[in-house]
Image 1 (cartoon, rainbow, N blue to C red):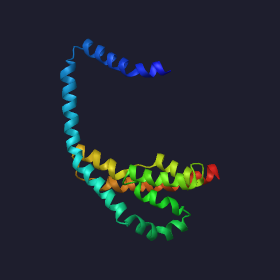
Image 2: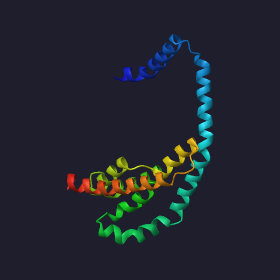
Image 3: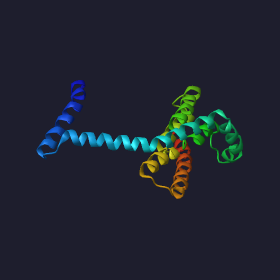
Image 4: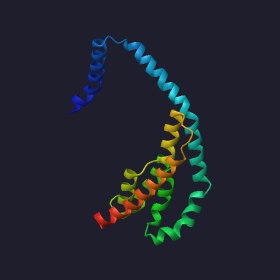
Length: 173
């Protein structure tokens, strides 16, 4: 098994080179053009990524997350949404790494096999970092009008989080 996993990348590279030579493709110029296109895409999305990272840092450091949790707690308690998952649910559409910190905290406090641990695991798999994904893809494609996309994606995230709680309750408890 280890030998096959060590050989898979060199074999793939060799197969690509053989295919390119059989098609009479200039491999080196194709490779450099791909690098040029990739660097161009990277430069297009960098400002959006930096702005998003700064916003996430400000969001977490300012206490806005705690304020939103307090503000939403009457609604979430009525819906029987666990209050310990609320910071994760708020940050998940904004930042994958930020929400991962909250998920790790839930695993540490309650354990991965607890209701909270299982629910947050299902949420991680069924939701998206909406604003990060939108900023990367729309910056790369230079799309300007994204308001309907964000609305629909956030609705899907809220629905996915609610269903995650329901699935956890039905399947595990």
